[in-house]
Image: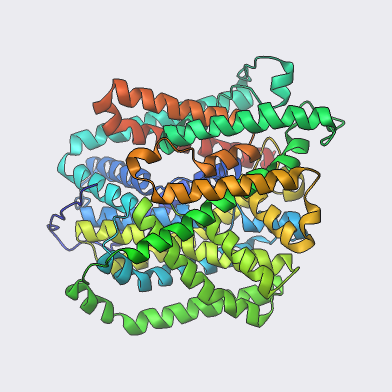
Length: 577
């Protein structure tokens, strides 16, 4: 991908009140989408482009309604930075370690402490990213694909307003369709689910009308979609019938779905496959990166960084102190273990920052597992310490990845880094409040609601599984699942290394280990829906190349946002009833 050449802004309007308020407003709307999707399928969506398009539309409409200063490019960058950081708040633990802790220990945080915790780990990530900005952006010259694409879109929006409005209309139309189908299915009339028979239906082989799955499938691409299909066939059409016939898994006495009893066995090979692949891939990329020659630093940027040396040091110390205090007071973690989590978070955030810069994919799950394994040695048989110290590493790494992409976008459009940091601080405050409230509204009873066909929560299953093994030993793995997990770990290690070393032209023929493993811990219907979306996007890109290049991402984002927002609204409605 070629670098975008920045166009000098016409004015200096950037960190304005309206830019921050727009970002806060959009972040409050988009954050529930990622919380909902994270609990449904274990993935979240980078909301930078969605926030950019919606902000552009909002101010186009407002300025038409009355007089006002034109909405400018650098204000748009501040707005999308605020909104995307709010939406990425789920890396602070809302869809993985926090619900996993509830399942393992029964601890459910009240709204205030939950908001404070999610904010603290994300705030730490903001200042870690500020320290990593110069070595990763200016010295290494990494691409940061998401930031680059956002910059390209932003420059295109302000250069070609008419084409930009068409893209926004596609997004809003897709969102409206997705929301309408979700509303109809939930309240008006149930959309029929087709299945080849009663037995396959019990194993999850039904066609789900969810357009959220179609949108996500279009985003992840055909390679991941095919891998999900293969994983679903292996797990739910191959292993699942054998487990039932051999008596290793006994069906539940009530209910038609076999998902809950089967997933308690299948999650072990699935988790082993995902964890081994992501860790081996991460380590392989670290080795490869060290062999590459770093580029020369940007002298002008070094001066800009030095100007904020004292402020950033004080902010990092304050963020670190807040995290340590909350670890000790909320979870009873020993002071020394809480302190050790900080350098580990910094190191792993640096690793994630480099991987994101090269591939665009943040390996937050792998970082969490590495931290969990490390604290199994430091604090053995302590599930709460294991989960929440790993949460510090994962949350800091997630916000680091988001802000480094924002820094890349800002660099390409001529933004001021310090002002982007201020915008992200507003964003994580918004995301912490909204995300925590949405999570508590969606999952009031984690013990009874999670790891079910309605809320598969695959990321939660992964964190919980690792914590239980480290807490009770391998004896917690049922029956032959241990042997399956060892085989899956070997296969995942090989696939992870190959994914790191193969050329891009060959990589498309390699199955995605993460997608294969994910298919073991989500319903087969979810994998089929994601595959359908990926295949549909592939056909559209072949048949309608120009349309797909301009509008496919916007349409997919709309499908995700529409159903997510309607799902959150329906959940709130059911609680109020």
